[in-house]
Length: 259
Ligand code: MG
Image (cartoon, rainbow, N blue to C red; front, side, top):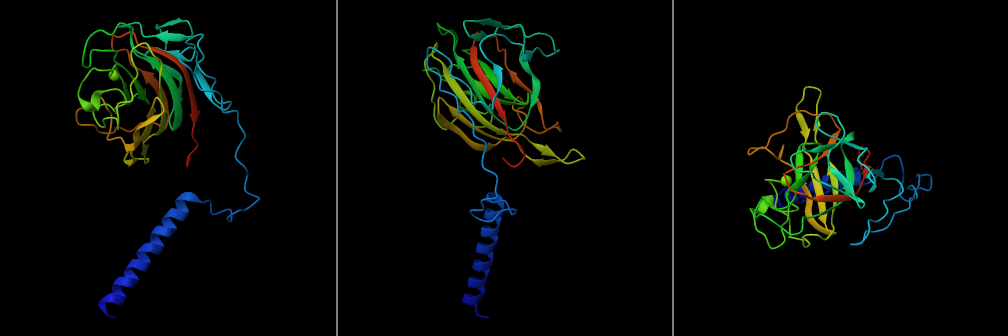
C-alpha cells in the first residue's frame, strides 16, 4: 500500500467514526428516520415573556419556585423558613440572614429567574449588588451590578465565578429587571466517587448568550476548583452577599438523562 492509499484509508476510517459518533449522539437507535411510531414531543403552553412592569407566565410543564407570593419553596441552611423579604411580587435579600436553598433538590435543569439590582447603586467592584445563583449549592453564576462598574472579568455579572467571564456584558441598569436562563448538566461520579463527567452550563443573560456550554472546573468558591462527590441532585442556592438584590419569576424544568 503506498502512502496515499494508507492516508486515504485512515481518513475514511476517521470520517466513519465521526459519523457514527454523531449518529449516536443525535438519534435514537430504536427508531428509523421519519418513523411515525416514534412518540411526538409533549405539547406545552410556552408561557409568556416578562416585561419591566410584570413577571411573565412560566411554561405549563415548569415547576414554579417563586410565583410572587411566598417563599414556601425555600429554606435557610438549616431547613428553617427563609428570612428574605417578600413584597410586590418579588423577594429581596435581607442582608446577613444567610443564603437560601430550594427545599427541592435539583440537578440537570433549565432554570429561569429574574433579578433587579439595588437603587441607588452603592459600593463598587464586588461590593455592589452582589448575590449569586449557586447551582447545586456548588457552582455560582454571579449576580452583580456590572452596569458601568468594573471588577475582575471572571467575577462580573454572568460569570461562572472565578472560571469563565461572560462572553459579553449584557447587563441592564440597576432597578431594571434582568433575566438569567440557565441550562445546567450536573457532574457524575462512579460508585467509588471518581468524577466521570464535569458539570456544564449555558447561560443567557437578558436573552443574550454569555456562557456557551462551558465545562465547570469544580466548586466555584475554591481558588483551585476541584470536585467532591455529590448526589445527582442538591438544592439550588441563592447567595446573601449583604446586598438587597431582588428576585422574581423563578421556575425550573428538570431535564431527564440524555436531554
Ligand atoms: Mg456572588
